Length: 413
Ligand SMILES: O=C(O)[C@@H](CO)OP(=O)(O)O
Ligand SMILES: [Mg+2]
Image 1: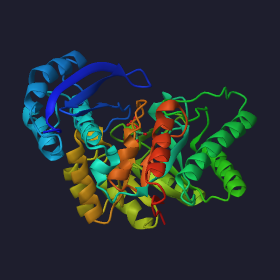
Image 2 (image 1 turned 60 degrees about the vertical axis):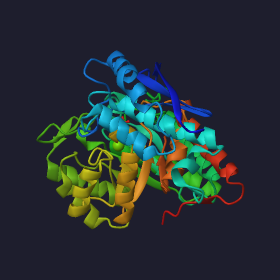
Image 3 (image 1 turned 120 degrees about the horizontal axis):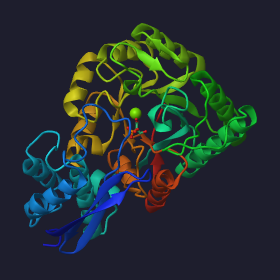
């Protein structure tokens, strides 16, 4: 059988931020694949555990002792069976024995191996032979919060979505032009700006949230006029990182806001800057405030990241409480492609949009583009500049070409 798992391999490698992570190889009788686990900085409380308590060496040890012998002989084509086997070998819900990094790298490498063996591309293995919708890239232009080590604005990401671009090349190019324009404006307006970029390649500057949004709005206006592409604005507030248990700490502004004041602040920013994308506006246990905001802004994307951590049980609560209308999908948050797919299915069955996302500590891999196309996500969150980010954008361009004339852009509005 060509797709029988014959051998596995694992090694320590690094993310673009220098975090230690693992790369797994899955070898079949006639093909192979490899994948690297990315690493987050603003990690949600409900994510699976990245490494076992004893660290990366313990993860490698457990892999050799249990995962490798457990998977050898299985048919890689049955992704669900492979992923269930990983759960069974681990025996805990959060992969605390083998580590989420080992689980996700193995699960994704299995997809790549099957693609290799069958002469397909990974997006076809995940999404089937009818997958032809290309997601819009959601790009990070200015960074703050944890990603800028507390030195930038208080919200973590100031984002753009070129939803009017007719094709993926124009969409990616538009994001790059806005990023460049933001850099030009910052250099002109802020004497302390030295061209610094953060973990995700977004500009870092000692500016307030409002200033960041003003700069971004002017850059978007200019590029939109020049290229004739409609571009939406967004934020990832990553509010759990600001929450101290009682109040939201705005370090840059040197003050704390009560939950009500923070709510009003988010609301006024959405209105003032006409944001179409709002991720994690509240901390990860506050389903109530999410629901209140979603009811107010039905036509915007209100997105749960730390709130759901790609976990179908958390998403089920969100659906019951009408907490958001979209969910961020990070396969590494939940550990396997199968589990992430369960969350995707639940979301789509309940009219939620999905956004497939990278991590702040990401790698040279373009696999995320395949996952986004395979899951039929209308949006992929990948950053804009820096080779870890461009790797995903370039892979989207390749997939567009691979679909030779039948690719189409997702529908956003
Ligand atoms: O909060 C986020 O959405 C992500 C990616 O942008 O950040 P991190 O990987 O640090 O959790
Ligand atoms: Mg987030």
